[in-house]
Image 1: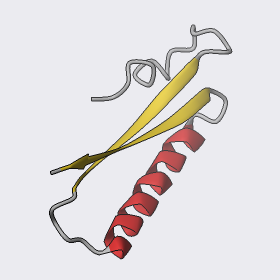
Image 2: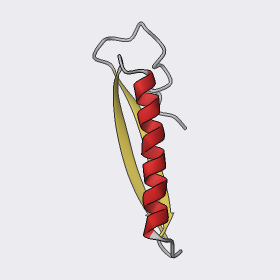
Image 3: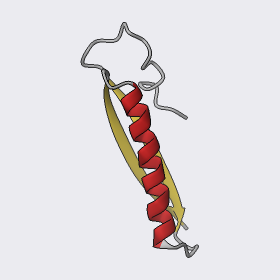
Length: 72
């Protein structure tokens, strides 16, 4: 689910200092063996997409929030 602040990014009535948050939540099952390369490639791909989204709204203040969850 998108952060509520991101869902109003196209609203031009927001204050100039309003920060739109783009959340990136990554859950990893630590019991599964996965290549570190796969994890790194996934993160690079997701960061690239986040950058594309932020560039689309370059005139707006935005913040990327990354959270990793390790699950058993």
